[in-house]
Structure formats: structure tokens, C-alpha cells
Length: 278
Figure (cartoon, rainbow, N blue to C red):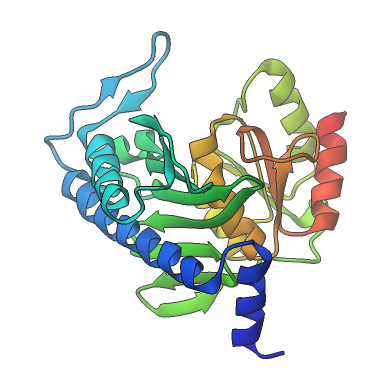
């Protein structure tokens, strides 16, 4: 079967017609384009003044977060009014189509504040079974990771290349990533350390970009805790489209957030999952 036929068959398997899939994809890229424009206006700007939206601790939000999500929602209001929306900054909007757009206008606001290019814009689409399509976009680097409807590609300054998660890697040879060294509670940190102590290399701090690098075959494991739906829906779609595995720490569905483990192969996923379980 040729590549075009494979793509069409994959789209049909999701329960979405090829025509609707094409429309969803086109809209998602328009969202990513406008989010690039809005976020780059503020990135490394002296006029960026973060606010803390947490009752306790520090959970930053900026004008860039809000501008990015407003711009994406405006496109969805015009092009996909029957679809639901779940966004980090402006919450949920009900829909009638059975599809939900899950938006994180800046995943990695702390990195954004620090001028580091490891943040990204997350655009995911779910149906009643979970994620069916996603984009992880890094505006400053000009990289767009896309997965779903038969597509698993990175589009960047050097053109478009396939995304393929790395296979055949034992945990002793694996590169493991997480955003925060403490990885949640003391119990969650202890579980993470059981995996990290067996991995060849452990690095921190890339937020959603770590999942993109896993889909591209550069990272082997990502383990995190305390995530929300808008943090994971788009990465799930991209990682799965690239042939990776992503679940919660019990091996169940991950798209509601919480404790997340992504791996380049089922074998590596099983190794890490066993250690997380203790």
C-alpha cells in the first residue's frame, strides 16, 4: 500500500473523514502561525511583566500567554464554532461536534520569562477516545512537530523531515528527561530516581520540547508528574504518531494529565514502568 493510501486509511481509522481531517489540520496550522506571531512579539522583551496566578507558590502568566490563546480562540470561533475548547488561560467552551481543541498558549512560561527557547505552543485535538492530532510548535527556533491523521513530521528551517522515535535502546543506554528535578511529591521523586539511577543520562528543564525531541529520536524517556490536560494532549498525539509510547505511571491513558511517562519503544516503556511501580 502506498504512502497516500496509508495516510487515508489512518485518518479513516480515527473516525474522522479525510476531508474533515484536512480541515482540522489546516486550522491547527493557522493557530500555530498566529501563536508564533503573538508569542514572538513578547519573547525576550523588556516589556514582559509576569504575574503570579497561584494562591501558593509561583505559577506565572504573561501578556504573551493571554495574547496567544486569545488569537487562537478567535480563529476557532470563526472556523470551528461547533468544537469545544479547553485552554490553560481562559478555560473551557462547550461544543456539539464531539471534538475538543486543547490549547496551551505557552508551555514553559518560566523558560519564556528567562529568555530560554525551550518553551512551546501546544495545540491538540481530542475526540471521545482521546488525542487524535497535535502540534508542538517552538516559534523562536522555527520548529513545528506534528502528529496525527497519518502524519509524523518536523517542519523547520531545513525543510520537512519524518519523526521517528528511537527504538532498540535499553534503559542503561537511555537519555531521560523531566522538567523539574524534584518530579512532584517525595514519593514521586523516589520513583523517578529509581529510573534515573539506571539511565545513562538524565537532563532537566525542557518542558514540552522534551516530548518533541523524543518524537524526533533524540531523547528516549520523559517522566513527569502533576501535569494538566493542556500540557499533554498535543505531545501525546505527536509521540504516538512517531511510534513512541506515552501513558500514565500505571500504563493507562495519559490525556487527563497527572503522572506521565513517554518512551521511544514499548520495551523501554515496560522497563521504566516496572521501576516506577517499585
